[in-house]
Image (tube, rainbow, N blue to C red):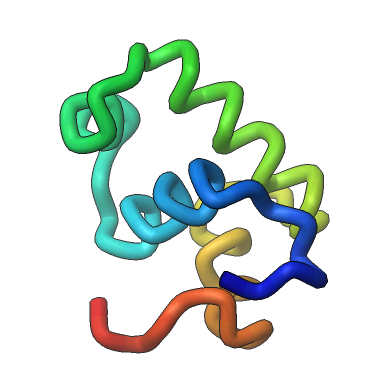
Length: 71
């Protein structure tokens, strides 16, 4: 979506799931990936957005316009 975030398209998908309040297990099921892979993506998202937790990552992503407010 937005290149300056540095997030991959997969990380954007995970971020979108986080914004919907999904758990690691739910995200894994939705995206057909393992829970460990979800955790890795979340870790990268937190690093790239300089967030300390999932809620902060979603908040920053909203502020940056990476995700919509339609969740």
